[in-house]
Length: 411
Ligand SMILES: Cc1cc2nc3c(=O)[nH]c(=O)nc-3n(C[C@H](O)[C@H](O)[C@H](O)COP(=O)(O)OP(=O)(O)OC[C@H]3O[C@@H](n4cnc5c(N)ncnc54)[C@H](O)[C@@H]3O)c2cc1C
Image 1: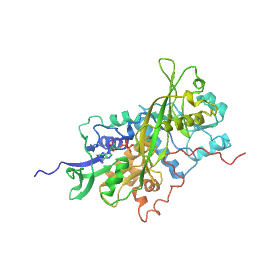
Image 2: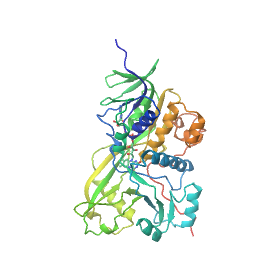
Image 3: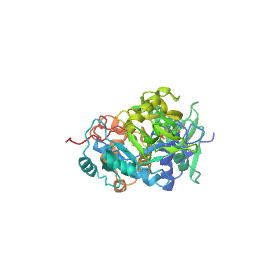
Image 4: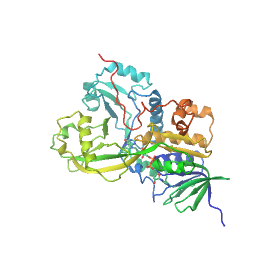
């Protein structure tokens, strides 16, 4: 009997998480095998073409703020040349007082200088980015086509092996490391180290080696609206992206003179239905009114022209799960990217590669990974005794819904 093929490093899942990690390892001279049940990369949530990226600037757990700042810089380094840097405006919530100087001091306390985040009154924002609302302007905010980025990361490379249409059902410990088995319990291959980046399916793969992960689906639908040039919305449509209760991209004028405007997203906890829902488009129409602060807008004039539906994977505490699975040596996890696939995949690429290649502490620290941040992302935070290493962030740290800038103590 011939022994199964062996690879030193195998990545399960060719979404943006797995692809970014594989690409980083290739850049570091490693041979990588990537396995996916689909016939091509970016078949699932990472088929998303309109993902935005910006550091988190709302009030919240300090660790989340530090993490998204580091992750944003990593994402910028990875995709800055290819993503669309249109800037992102984060409006102040209507019911909250807004004092620019207080918000500016707050941003400074987060080490976010003016080049990355600027508090603006509505008249200043109108002049700078065309949004007539108080809020925070993030000039380096951008959007990334996750599908293109995933495919680009996995373009042919002499040290990259891709195994498509290959579904991994379970893992088993063997002498050489780990055995990957398929749905018929056939051996697919063996690996020295396995990085599981299979979104929700990571839960089943981890369960096959007796590790329970608190992962759940959150369905999301983004709407592509067509807006007639003469309609009352046309003059209101933004030339920058807005991120608040939902988000939208800068409007695009089509050759026929009408506008295409992308608004998202619904946030359907516990749902995993990939079909389009009319109710999600209606939800997005309502969000559109909120984002533009246009309560009198007639939502019937936002005609549906298309949509994107994806199933996000989120962890119980809404932070991603990125790191070595210490109780199963040789297994690494990169999952629960929630609604921050751009940021967390860039961070996962650096952190997982550093752990797989056993970089020393100094190198990790140079990347910005203080021990408490690594612990906050580590799978170990869910297991007994972990609370000491990583105090629960859950109540404050949303991985999915932005926590809006609330006004500092009011006038
Ligand atoms: C509506 C919506 C809006 C969003 N907006 C944004 C945004 O603005 N900004 C942002 O940063 N993020 C956004 N996101 C989130 C982003 O899309 C995800 O975080 C990201 O795509 C997740 O990537 P992933 O690689 O973890 O998972 P996936 O892309 O789902 O990849 C998992 C891969 O694993 C493979 N797989 C699964 N099981 C197995 C198995 N058993 N064997 C082999 N292969 C397997 C799958 O085929 C798939 O290719 C949004 C998501 C949605 C739904």
